Amino acid sequence: MPLLILDDLNATFHIAAGDVQAVRGLSLQLEEGESIGIVGESGSGKSAAMLSVMGLLPATCEVSARSIVFNNIELTRIGRRDLRKLLGKDIGMVFQDPMTSLNPLYTIGSQLTESLRLHLRYTPRQARERALELLRMVEIPSPETRLKQYPYELSGGMRQRVMIASAISCNPKLIIADEPTTALDVTIQAQILDLLMSLKQKLNVSIVLISHDLGVITSLCRRILVMYGGMMVETGTTREVFYDARHPYTWGLLRSRPSGSPQTQSADGARGRLVSLPGAPPDMLHPPPGCPFAPRCPHAMRICNEYIPPITDFSSTHAAACHLVYANARLPKKEASHG
Image (cartoon, rainbow, N blue to C red):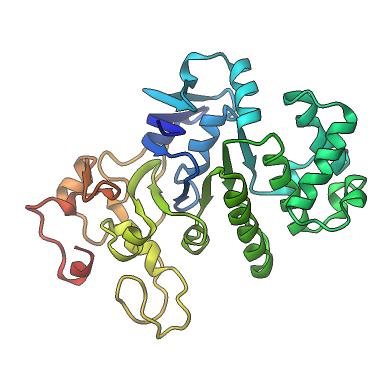
């Protein structure tokens, strides 16, 4: 039984201007001990999908699904209070900006011990010892001193390490990391990713890593899910997505990825400078009736603008939602290397 199963997940924000369809029909499975990366531009629905599972979206957002199963428990059938108790212990969340996620009015120690006392019923002494152990696990020097400090006294990298320590404090089965390296310099980014990889191996924890950066995803994840316009447009192993991508949006993401120098061959076989994706993401107040990427796709056909493409499987792990992959659709010669 997979650790997490999402079947036809939808999240709609009801605002004054109308309904924003942030997530549309998302389905995925995550095995125990597996790491999966969710990649896409801002506004593609990556964070909203995972916050839906956590029950952290505002009351103005309506979440529905055919099924949401975590650790053999159907989450759509339990109350909000029971959901918070379950997920607070078994799912850890690393948010994008630790400065806004950590309370500036409380010390690091008080924030780390709170969840331990709430979910595991630790005594104050037990909670303090566990907090010190957690800070050592995330390689923060002088942990006794750090417990007494406030978030503003720590660097961005250290604050992110504290967030990771908080996420693993109750020995969760799953960690959701939402853009954990945003606003950090390249060296610190690498350290945070190495730390997540190390913790995954030590604790055998599953990880969902949300990012707009394919380079970040590939360093940690065995499988990738590409989202656009609130929908899954392609999924596969890291190797399948990088070397046998089937969706034009994935091709665009690969072209926009730095690959060493302007003359370095990119993953899709093209040479030259980085290529940006033309246009802008769709307005989810009024999403396109067909493929959400059709208005920006250089290979769009009439059917692309009229009908949402079904998901086509290429292997047991690789699938894409694109009209171009139909047997009777002629693939542009320029992209023949993608199959």
